[in-house]
Image (tube, rainbow, N blue to C red; front, side, top):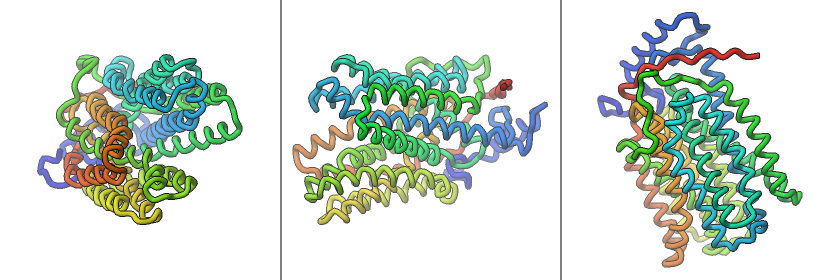
Length: 443
């Protein structure tokens, strides 16, 4: 956190203190025998050329896209899986809770794996497991096996999520500017691409076992290619490895609370916007369904331009402004008298919460000397929020009404305004000196 306690640096979430910049300069001066065309980012004694960092940034963006494409591909074939396994809606709902359970259980392991094998090898292996697991749910013959497949699917998703976000924060620190919103925007682009391909496959009545197995193979290859250029800054040999399981640090819990509010609002809007338009405002099924796609597109667009906004105004002001937009959107939804008003409200909610989770991951990554552990803590909290949001909305709607449910969303959006200050981070404290990446011979 800024020692003066006032605002962020001009670099947005990637801002650093004067001491950090001095350390970077010293580290750059000590670098020997490197191709340094505009050396940048000598964090912890390891320096890389601007060209090398540019390749690493594109590589991480590609990893985020692949990760999102897996999610989008799976989502489109859930109806086929339900019919194939022969489960009721309630049983399907139970099975769909297992990805979040698996992710929450496994995410704390990601830091240990990265320390043991190095960030690049860890991401390569975890991403390959995640893409390969895409084929498992369609192969499940019954409910129990489906739950197990989705547990594995969620566990590999969570661990690869932590690994890629930690590398995203590393690149952001070295380039000294906000990148996380754009990276999460690429995840959303990947999800849209995966869902588009899945929609085509479903419309053509392609067997989901064939579709998802083929998608898993293609995405596995793309993921392995993308991982070739990510940074591989390893921990010093004398550094103690992170614990296998540990409670997240207090700073991560506070940051996670902000992420919880945003993810709850996001999940509630994605899952319930179409139902709200249909049941509360008596909208046609086509227009109601379109609200979900429009919300997802709004989220993706906002994340892709979010880094420019954060770079101009800083993380805290950006999230506070987002909280204002999301709160206004919630008010529009709960007071809507026609579909246009409600659609405008959902759009504002999407715009308001879009960049909060990327900025929460970025703040967690520099809230202490163990970024993977902090990111895992924030990710666990946000995954939990995504898990409980749909059921909480349904329970409140059963007891009262959907309008009251979105009243809760409005209150949580208001919390972003008051909680944004915890995202004011100015670089990691007491970061250990890390040896530079070992050169890799190609070809």
